[in-house]
Structures are given as C-alpha cells and as structure tokens.
Image (cartoon, rainbow, N blue to C red; front, side, top):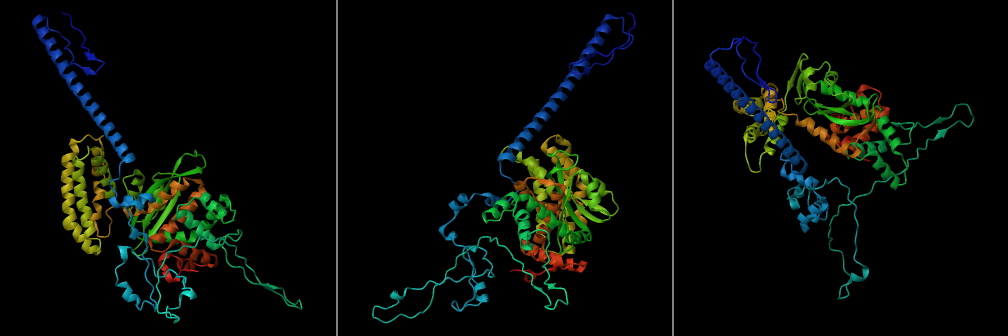
Length: 552
C-alpha cells in the first residue's frame, strides 16, 4: 500500500481528535483492521471524555445560574439574615407597631422633676425602676406648668365650710413646639457729634457666615442638619419654609449650602490632620450621581470615598468626592501617610498597599458576607459547607466580643491564645474544601475570596488595637446612603464637594457624641470671628463640652 501523509481524524462538531495514523500503513489486512479498531476505540474514549467535560461544564453553569437566581430572589423578597431580628421593627409601619402595643405603652416615660410636692431628691427618684423599661427623657427638658383649679362654686363643703387646698395631683405630657420662622432685624445705632467735628460712628455689624445673603447663622445650621442629618432634600425644605410664609427657592438653598461649606473648610482641614496623625484608618467608598460633570454623561456614577480614624477619644470621619474609582484616589487621599489601612478586597486599594510604611488589612465582614450569600442559595433548612465557615468566623467574633473591654495588651494575648487556634482550623478547612468546589458557584466565590484575602485577613492578630473588620466606616456610610435615597443626586461637582464636607462635619460630631445641630449652630456663630488656627481648633467637637454649646 502506498505511503500517505497522516491527517488527524477529527469531528468538528465536538472538537474531538483521534490519534494520527502512522505514515506507513500495514499491508496485512488483519493488521490494518486492528489498527482501525484501535483508532476507533481511541476516538470513542476521547469523545466520551469530551462529552463528560462538556456535561460537567454545563452542570456547573446551570448551578451558577440557579444560585444567582435564588440569591437575587432572596435579596429582593427575603429577609436579611445578617441583621438582628429586632432590627425589622425599625422599618415597620405605624399601624403594625400599634397592633402589637398595649394600652400601657401609650404613655411616654418622663423623669419626675425634684419638687417640693414630691418630697424626693434626684438621688431618690433615680433609684426607681422606669415604668415599662423605657429610657426616660432628659430631665433638662423644660417644664411648663398648666394649673387646673377647681371652680370656686365647688370649693364649699356640704356643711357650709369653705375648702382649703391640701395638695395637688401632677401628671406630665410630652409636647412639641413647631418650628418658628421669624425675621431678625439688626438695628445698628449710629452716633455723631452735634458740632460735626468728627465722622459718625456706628455699631459693628454681627459676624455672618454669608454676609451677602439674608440667611442667619442659625438658619444655615438648621438647613445643614435638615438635609445631611435628617435626609430631607432641599426641595422639601423649600416647601417647609413656604408653609411658614418664607419663599426661598431651592437654588438659593443650594448656594447657601455651598457657601457655608466653604466657610467651614478650615475645620475639615484640621480634622484631616488629626485623621492622618493616627496609624489606623478605615476606608470604603459608595456611588454618588453628579449630573453636571465635565466630559461625562449625567448617568455616570462617581464615588464618595469615606475614611474613619483618629486617636482614642477623637474619632474622625471624612467624606471625599471624586469622579473616579481608580487606584490614584487612595494614593492622593493618603499621600505621605504610614500605618494600617483597613479596606475590602477592591483593587482600587492595590497601589496604596505597595507604598512604604502602609500595611493593608482585610475585612472579615466582607469575607463572612459571601458565605452568608452561599448559605442563602441552599434549600430551606439544609446546612452546607457555607455554614461551617460561618460557624468558625462566628467564633472569631465571639472572642472579639469578650475582649472588647480589655486593654490592647490583654486583647493581643487573647487573640494569640484563642483566635489563632480558630484561624488555623479555618485555614485547614479552606485547604480541604477549596479544590472540591466549582469556582463559579457562590460558595466557590466565597472560598476564592477568603483564599486571596487570607494574608490581609489574619494581620489583625499582630496587635491588640487593630480591628477585625471595616464595620466602623460602613456604619459611617449608612447615613449618607439613607440620605441619597431621598435627594438621589448632586447637580454639580461643587454641590458634591460641599455635601462631602458637611457629611464629614456632622458624622464626626455624631461619632464624638455631640448633637449636630447645637454644634453647627455654635461653630457657625463663632466662625465669622475666628482668625487663627487656635480659634478653629477650639471649635472641634472633642474640644467642646456639652455645657459650652449655645442652647438659646
């Protein structure tokens, strides 16, 4: 038989190739028949292997789509298993709350003031257990006495003797005075010499944050709190003012916000100095829509970068607007800083990790959240490998909860003796399970994230003061997210930057247990007269005491 060039025998439909025939085919018919049988057998084996491979990939894809669909339905219609069961009460309607309330719950618990009628001192009243276990309202709330007297005709005894007052019954109601819109008339006296020998002198005008506007400093404080603490859009605040007879367009309100933010920039700068002066910073980001950005569509998503840090007793929360989510943003915000940065697995924090003196830590909440999603795609009542991971991570958080009140040295010892054991057990479990789970599944994604982030996730064990997760900054972002659902977007970049600055101020005040409105009103009254760094430093929330805030 003539020699021939060997060509692969292939089936293009399935992509399976048989072994090539030798260049010299045997002349013996029996040998040729055996060779062809061998080729056919090899082709069948290759076809079955390829078929099994395609079937495995098909099943993995079906599982991936099924898990994505189940997880999406759970997120849309199901409860969140990460939240405490009691948190659902925060979002119940008033009718639902009223149905579960008792008649005794119709009364708000007020602390009884120490008066001569009760004959008790504040120390005595403090020993009594509050009715209904409610936290009593502050005793500093003003009390207005409304006296109800018995008609004179009813104060005569049946025997004809006039009755005398022998006591009184006192009950208290919680009342509220609606917001009052008024006009302040600043009258500046002017004096001059009757002889005309000297130019007249006038009283100095009070300092104003926006001297060219007709908005008082107190109104600006209320405006900022209404939008950035209460989440009320400027358009709705415009309606609130209109009901009181003050017609202020929302465009004017927006200019007032931007102008006030510019006046408060020095305080934000001092806060940044305090933040960068500490070696532990939390960082995260959340989307924000800005309609008028140069070279970008109105539907483009920008970012609000959030940082939280500061030394003990001086927590600082800073918001920073930037159109980009690139690695250059953390580099710019943390330029020259050295310390431990806690962030999620986003690649935007990759470049900052290679800067000298910067150590990046991972977030166990983000790792845990992926296993929570993996547990949600399982049938109801079924436990799987995701639950095993959640149980081990739960042990880590139980140790952290026990060590919350310990010193840094004691917490470090607890981590090394107990947390290290759980970490090693979780690592062994991960090495055993990871190769057996398809990487495209929800559980495979959780395992892959845990494996990739492992060195960053375990670095918190090195010190007692390093956090286990990024929850502090995520909690700081939450008020911004709630407000964003109301006002939806910023119109201009100037408005976005002003919003970032005001959120920085009010969230830092809240983190320092300072009431935002009283603090803003205090600093807005003081800023027009502040001329030195010391003046501005005195206005920082940790440098003020409650009794220093203006209450009138």
